[in-house]
Length: 403
Image (cartoon, rainbow, N blue to C red):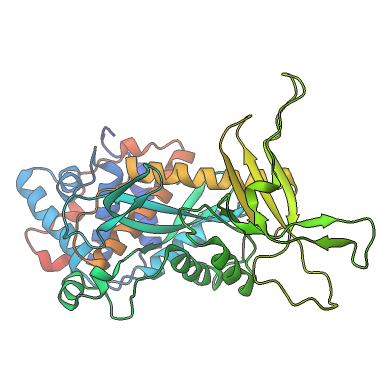
């Protein structure tokens, strides 16, 4: 991204946004450095390293070195709470637009060293390889326009939580333990639902490693869902019957993919359905055979990308028709687009600190930068115009100002 001088309108927008999102920070200097970091994420060309961001904020090399140290202290050394800022971002995410869904995505950031907080080896479903990386689950609020990140959880393996010295160096709180991505996602859903009307959760296999377990957790919370399942996932189809006490009969569990046999078109002009659905029983143990009300019907959907192409399978408790499900799947696609932009334009890939709190601070500001960049784009104020030489960030070497 090329940087250019910030217009007065753009500079005022950045200041107002930072004051709104970070109003909970008790000290003026903390709010000033939150704004400076936000400006750096938007303005710095290329990698959003502390050095590059400081260079976009300062008037020369000497000042840039001081600013870089102060940004480092604000992100990795200062113990400010990131959660109130994320609640504000969630409030701003929809604005006047109706929320279409809550969506989730897994981010896998390859890393070389062993000191960056959370780094471990895991399988990357995008590349199909096992990589040394930092992995996180993100929760997004999706409207008909895009998907905005509102919360993040860092995936930690026992090598981080089981080693007291490593845990202490990374400043990982004592109540943080290793959890699968789906459990972390359920916790983030709880926090979002505490302050906002519930929306359907849409999650692919990357973010919901055990979709059946997540479905049960969401059902207990009365959160509707559309979750991707594997083709071999056992499901219990419902066969529509013309006779019978409840108007339908049960069948034993079968693989999800078996319910959607591939079929050839009768003619080359015959269109292939993009989405096909069939009713199934809710996931869970089979009930004992005794007279009881009919169980609520879920639907299993198969998305087919052309004859013989790859298929993905989605389980839902929503009574949506195919167009409604496609709209929710579009929200999931928009989420992946957002993740790509967070990496290419807003610094998602660029945190190299060793602090758990620092990672959460950085991800909060990355989310804020995306939300602000989206707002500026709507008003035709390009994020390319956000290079600033702001005297408010100059500290004259007083690093304590950013604590």
